[in-house]
Length: 102
Image (cartoon, rainbow, N blue to C red; front, top):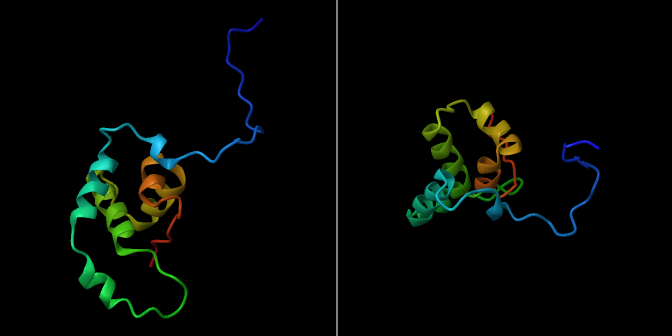
């Protein structure tokens, strides 16, 4: 008998996981969201012309940038990858994984 916990990666979730459960209550990402939500971004949203495909909300992109800069990640490509790899960035992106490369 083994003392290891078995990992079954093929088991489906019965319910979709909540991104809110991925972070502790005192996590930096939660603070960033709180600060970004308190900002008036109406000038940014008014500038959006609405052409082409739907855009990500400026608050989402700003939260990813601020969190990335706060944790020492300055590359837009690394920030984009973090939305796939990092629970904190995925929470900030609301699992939308925006493409941030120019």
